[in-house]
Length: 224
Image (cartoon, rainbow, N blue to C red):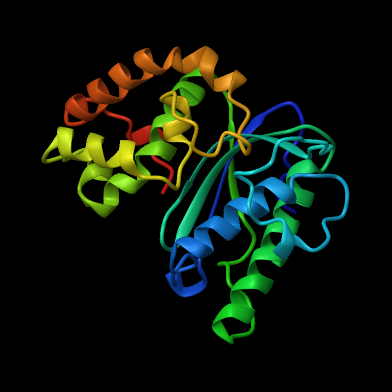
């Protein structure tokens, strides 16, 4: 039996499409998944999500949240979340809702049936400050793969090009931590802000990381 996430830790959660298939075909899919992150993060049952999928216009928040979502990134065939449970079994309940709800939407839209995700979600428990300092960069750097496939091997060809792309990529929480109001309704920035500093400080750190990736060894922390 695998370990269950507990309230005492922060967790990096990730999963991909079955057979590595795309799980986000277009922006409407990505918008729907983000709506799921918002509305399913509630101890109460969610009804009629089709009517409330626009989270940009939300002005009040009366949810009793299952988890704090600290960071996220959506890629064509997988996603990454950084979460902290707020209640017992909060992560399990949240991910169950996400898996069922988004799969139901995706299958109806694409006239398919069966599983969408590659088994149960995977998670890594954040054990210490070294991991917590590192993981926001790993999660937010994932879209770099779309313009520079060598980034995970620390072989970034054009750090400025990658940096500009990351800052323009809408489907992650990076822009919120850089001071832009992107999907601020979804995330709780308090914990990571203590580690990342101000938007200006974080931007300088990102630039430095990208320039130094060839000389920094993070192999022991590489997730995938």
